[in-house]
Length: 318
Image (cartoon, rainbow, N blue to C red; front, side):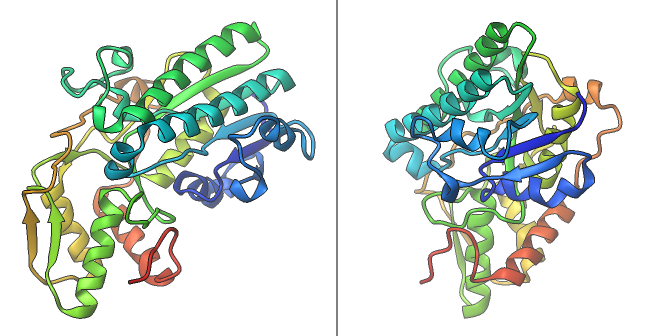
């Protein structure tokens, strides 16, 4: 579609920050909104934000209530309700206003953890998702169905497409102890231990493996999708290469300058052993796609951390 105005929700989050950082690379004009502009869980707020300043030509819906494993397990109903309401309100408002394109985001936690790997786009609704992420996963499965339904109802006037990133990381990540994911949690612990000269204790055995996707790469794929992806089937975005948490910790230690001892607390949960996905469809559509190598992405993230500590999103000072 011809570039016009893109409205980005969730502008204060990890993906929203990344979209802000690459906006100048695009021919689109951008409007960024976050929770300070309105609570997308409330009826009418999304429609008001979409109408303000004129209807956008595209919405990139990056707003979400995201938590770590403890928050997901402790309050699955809130995770479900918050995300399901935001998704319904934003996408249905876009349909009512005739927004030509909406790009929204799923999560790899929606896959059944025992399904054969690598997971692909055809397997989204096979079996139950990981019960530790039940609420968030259920909302994201419903987002896929909602996007399909609204595209059919629009009869060609609007397209609702969904992208599914593997675990995101990068500048602008969340360092809150109940919401942070594995990389920011390790980064913060090692930074503080480096300052005090102590050891670092990390959860689990370090054996699980994760596919980590640099947030800026995801932002660039989202902009590509705004222009060129119109299929109703979701699209996995991942490096198709994983790393063990133990090896990840070594890379983070090198990037942050931590030289102390790492202690693995095997009494703590490891999480899903692996979450390998197939990005074959994306690479077929974008043959020259080049993603940021993990080492460079972590070094960039660590540099941002050092430059902004302690004024980091979600950080709780001890």
